[in-house]
Image 1 (cartoon, one colour):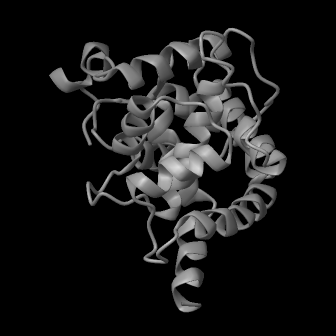
Image 2 (cartoon, rainbow, N blue to C red):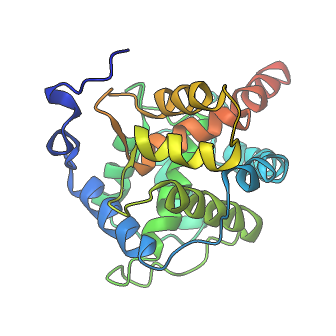
Length: 228
């Protein structure tokens, strides 16, 4: 891991590739202009147990919409899920969200992908240009958790450009662990977990997938498999 940046590390390489990504970036920047309530990375860590509990409750929602019980939600099941939760997105928007969150390209949304997808929906609902997408999902506990995740990203993104850089992650963790030698290593590890494409910047979706691992989503998934 050298300190020099390659061509792929330039901000230009991080430009959104799809209309959905552009909309997420635009909405996040608008949200960032409002500021955040987080004071330190430590205050985020203290919320992990409550977030974990909220995600566990969401497992029941996931299983309800996984109609064939195969452990993933296919495009048709997702469309019915949105209808039931009164999420007013167009068919094209639903497909774009599915494609963005189906990171294995296996035409199925697993539980961790479902969490990320719903959080992206929560963010996009706040877009004033959305067609009354502010209609609530009817899952207030989960929406409060999503607000915490959005707030966390806003806290980490110090320059409010819609991406978290390596330096911003280091700065956020250093604020919490002043004087601890391990803080730099912790920050780098956390950042590497977010930055899949190794371009030196993490967008909101990358952050969400990393966050689900930090609070132990895999454990919840394993429990579900054991109970089948």
